[in-house]
Image (cartoon, rainbow, N blue to C red; front, side, top):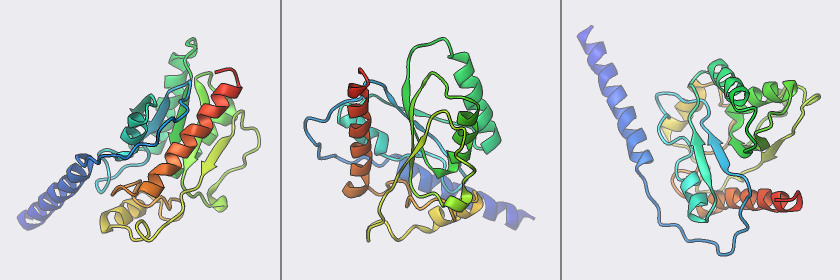
Length: 214
């Protein structure tokens, strides 16, 4: 009994140390000048978490966009999918009278949550929803009836991101994402080409805001 308890404690401490090390990583970014900024803030939503991956869900990606002048927030969600869906539903209902809009960024683990929300109607606070990463068509529900599209943004796998660390592989397996999420470990460690996908996406959103009267 004590041996098992000790092993479990050591494992939890190891996983916390791995998450802490990743969360505290800071990179000096080489900035791209003259980026067109979005009218609406960009909000990154935390996806499915596990003991293998729970701190700093998007790693340095929000900081990378912030360094380029974008207004960026990270919204933590409950770990469980159903709880995350209810949280967002209540969040939009409580703020239904506000004029502020946001560009939401999700990964495939939250796709079904937003699909359900957008089938009921697009909340006034949603300017756009960008799903970063690969999502197999077999995992999707029907897109019919969505009041606002969920826009897929692909991230190409390079030699630097093809090999996943063991804890990221176990995270995908324990959260049931092994077949739908090919993001790599969400931009960690820093790979310039992967981060530029987010910068290009932000530029597209900024151009859209401008055309639509932003």
